[in-house]
Structure formats: C-alpha cells, structure tokens
Amino acid sequence: MKRLFSVVIVFVFALSLVSCGAQDTASARVYVEGTSFMVNGNELWINGVNTPWISWNDFTGNMDEEAWEETFALLASDNINCTRIWINCEGESIVSLTSEGEIIEINSGHWEDLDKLFSLAEKYEVYVMATLLSFDHFKGSSGEDWQALVNNHDMADAFAEAYVKEFCERYGDCEYLFSIDIMNEPDWVYENEECGNVEWENLSYFFGKCAAVIHENSDILVTVGLGMIKYNSDNYNGNMVSDEYLYELTGDENAYLDFYSTHYYMWQEPYYGYPCTVSPTEFGLDGTKPCIIGETSNDDADECGLTLTEKYQACYDNGWNGIMVWMEPSWNDDTGWYEYDLTEEATNAMADYIGDLIYPLSVETEE
Image (cartoon, rainbow, N blue to C red; front, top):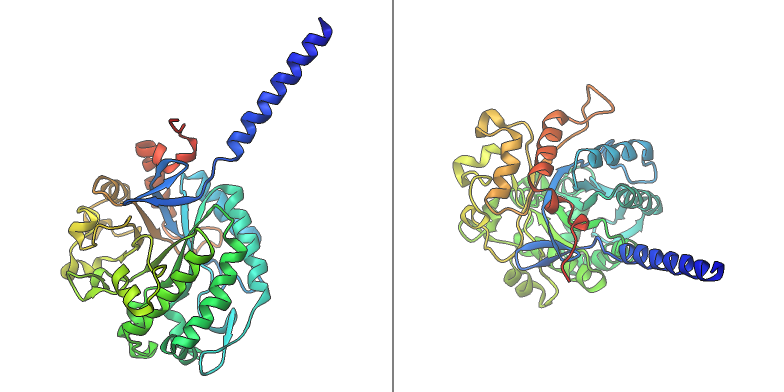
C-alpha cells in the first residue's frame, strides 16, 4: 500500500509538471490575423502609452535601470499592456556616422542597456514598441549625416544590415518586444528644411529595406509612426508606407508593414477630422491591417470633448486595435509622468471594460 501511495504521488507530481510546462509554452508573441492582433489564439487590444524617454537618449550605456524598473512596475499596476519607447532619440550617441552616412561604429553600451530594458519588459509582462529613429536625427549637429544615409540606398542597406539585423538577432526571442517602429514622424523629415526635406522615395525605400530585414530575421511586427494621416492615406497625399509602394521601391516581398500606427493631435482636426469617434477606414486608412493611434495627447479633453477614459473606449468601440497616449517625464516630479492620473484612470477603466483583450494570455483557448 505504501508503495502504491508513493507511485500515485509521483504520478500526480508528474502531471503537475506537465501542466506547468504547458503554461510555460504559451507564447506571449503578438502576431497578426487579418486586421487583429493575436496572442496564443486570442485577440489583443493595445491599452497603451508612450514613455519615450526618462533622460533623453537613455540607452547609451548609462541607463537608469532603477527608474525604468519603477516605470514598468507602475504601468503593469495600472493595466497598461504596452509602451512605446524611443531606444535612440537622436544622432550619434548610439550609431556614429561619417558625413556620407556610412556607419563608423555602434555603441556597445547601447546593447547592454537594451538587454536590461527587455529583461524588464519580460519581468513585468509589458509589451514594448521600440522606436529606432526619429525626425530628431535629421537636424542638429549630425543631421546632415543621417540625411546622407537615407538619401543613399547603399548606405540605407548597410544600416539595415548592420544595426537593424543585429537588433533582431539580439532581441527577436523576446516575446514582450511587441514591434519595431522604424521612425518617429518622418513627415517632418520630408516637410521641414532643418531636417533636409528628404524625398518620400528615399524615406520609404529606407522603411522598406528595414522592414524586409526585420521580417527576414525575426517574427517581430513592423510599423512606422507617421505624424499624421496626410501621408498614410490615399485620401490625402498618398500612403507612403503601403505594401505596394514599399515593394515598388525595393522589389522585396518582405518590405511591408504589419500594422499602421498613425499619430494624432488636435491641431489636425480642421484638416483630417477626429479619429477616435470613427473607424480606421472612415478616418482614411486602407482597412488591410490592424490600426492603432500610436501617439496622441492624454490631456485634450477640453478640445476634443471626450475625457481620456471616453477616448480610450471610443477607440475600441470604433474598431481601432489600440491607443497609446503620450507621457513625458514630469519635470515637477522626478518620479512621475505628466498627467498620469488621467492615464491610469483610463487604462484601469479599459481593463474593466475589455479585460480579456488586454490580457489574452489569461484567456483559455478553445481546443
């Protein structure tokens, strides 16, 4: 009898290991089905924010790991499942270039800091949209170097192979790396003289080449955070990141975006309307991909007529796949984020409203 009891205990223990193993194999990787984000067979809605930087150019070998850990812990506590972070804010602090746009070196401290960043993302189970570049790169002391890089297809190819591929090889297995945002608001690189007035043909070639390298070397989703719908829609000046245009420029079938992440601020309303109270297609997107509002204000209730909580809910109700409001560090409070009380109220309300879509891994998948 004693031996039989022991066998039963061992059998039950073995079953518990199998059960734990099954849970461990449930992947947090986000993928796309049609116009939805999916995780482990269940739909995901991005209940998101932007925490773009804490100290500007945080990841150059001097990352404030404690501050970033506090940030991830805060986001997780308020049901925020994704944050957009600029892993390089400008210029040569990470990638040093010649005046022709050729890479001289990549700061090794950058990789060391990103190791810590993505470890925190996994620890707190908060997805990261990693923004590689911004229009800020194209102005200032090293701006002409970045303009030269994007204006030369050989240099663009070299950057994609040297930096973007390395990024994918290092972090492609991090399931809480939700996506790569190739560039923040390239609209201003095209429109503004101080950024070089770089033509869309060259900007979009660069996006296509980077997207192709990402798709060839990882399962990470790809987007470009356009500053306004103006350059993301055939209703206006054309969709400069459409599948067709990126393929036309690169000839590479892997040169495509997985989702759209248009930015929006209220100054745009007279020209393009208001996105949160209409569907993505009614706003002007082509309806072929998931669509999020990748950057928008968290304090514009007086202008738009919706509280932030109502704004999040309206985005969901009208078919958007998520929203990510802008939060800068609060200079009046070194430990806080600007108007965070509004954000936490909205994100917690959304968890009550659509909790299963915010935490799809917690939902049992039907077999």
